[in-house]
Image 1: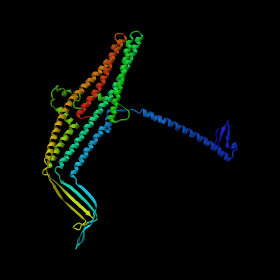
Image 2: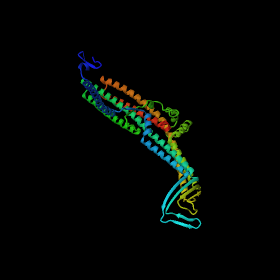
Image 3: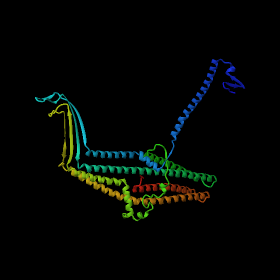
Image 4: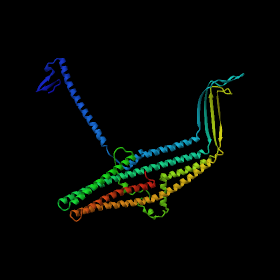
Length: 500
């Protein structure tokens, strides 16, 4: 047993006293024991460090090779695109330029202040000798001059409409930037749904491979039993090869779609889209009456202009208020009117005040080393060769053109609302039709498989049923995408996409 100062060996106590060691020897003995324990602890620590150093890089490399896959919703994709999309970054820079133009336009109404310091080395000194006041030096050898000039606009009639024109142009730029943002986000949403549909198509292709392989197994079993010929086995294996190639093409299309979405939203890490069921199944509810409000849309026959009504006018007015393209045209028309007024006011004179102060190291004729002055200035251009009238007519023509474009856009938005409601309604019915077709195709393939095993149907009938099931599943995936895009298009026409 280990005691306070000794160790036990075979039941006998071994201690420093039993060994009868001298004090220096005891100290050396204890020191060797301590060094042994320290060496063991250090060795263990080094081993742990080496093991950690070996495992750490491997774990990091494994984490880098297989980064976590995040789940991406439509709202996440739109938020990421707003934050980092390259096109939107360029549009925001264009908006900053428009604001800078407004700031520059304000300078026409602000005073200006300039200062100047000058040193001149003259070749000779020039002075007047005056009997009463002494010598008057008007040109020293080393000449120093300091001048301060100020100009204050007092009345500039043309500046105020010009400033309003610049402000309206900046507002038009803001609306155009909003329109560009909506266009980019619309593309992001389309690509997002295309990625979701690509996942659905890939699952359908993988399911078709499983069905085809089951058919191969069935054909092999029947061939071994002598019920069918080798042709049936080869035909089933060929169907598997076609299904596998279609699955590879679907995988390629999925990768391309995901890559396009990652570029649009600038997400470097892997992700998988999660399409909310409401995005493809719920009623859009964008306008009064929703997609099912076919009464207003259905009242218009093919080739007939839509009749005006209270509900349609209210919907159109709301859409025009929300659509940035229309607001941009309205602001551009107002800018053209203000610009035309500004060119007309250029016939009026402008009044400004000025002031000047100078200091120097010599005397003027008033025997002062400084001078100052202030006053008012009237500028009036009486004839300029017809430039102002030409500019005014050009601005007026631009206003007429912009208003005509606004009317064209108004009619286009009206048609988009009517067509969009019918499009959503039609695509929703198509989705229901193809979903019923999938159910019927599943039932058909089960019946044909039973008949094939019983010898009442040929293998061609079974392969045809398989193809019909795959085509029905692909049609459902396409119907989901078409309905989602139709809903997006309707909401964009109504000005409610993206949500603000």
